[in-house]
Amino acid sequence: MADFEINGTSKTYAEKFESLDADKKAAVEAIRAALLAKNKVHERISKKCATYNFGRKPVAKISIIGKSVRLHLAIDPASEEIAKYPVKDLSDKKSYAEVPAMLRISSDLALRRAFKLIELL
Image (cartoon, rainbow, N blue to C red; front, side, top):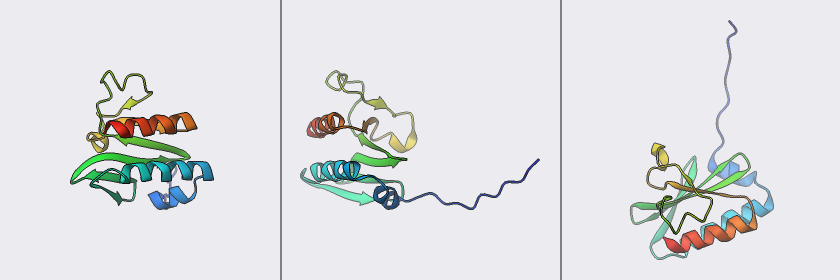
């Protein structure tokens, strides 16, 4: 059997954000501004994602996986008013249990949908 040497480290959220192209950076900044415009919502940037808390309760997370921007929201993905949006349920994963609804931000339409979902918070 061959021995493998793994010496790499994972990129931080800030490094991933800097490697995004201009339109995805603008989308992340627009979502960030919309979340911070809500009363008493604060931002915390960790190694993996940016978390937005209302007090101590997380209401949203923004994560970057490869070149894909993902918005995780603290809304029920099975509710009827959310059913018309392409939201994926990630409640089975422990790190996303409090923010189970995931929306990929890949276009202007997805960005407009994200703003509508942020209004529902």
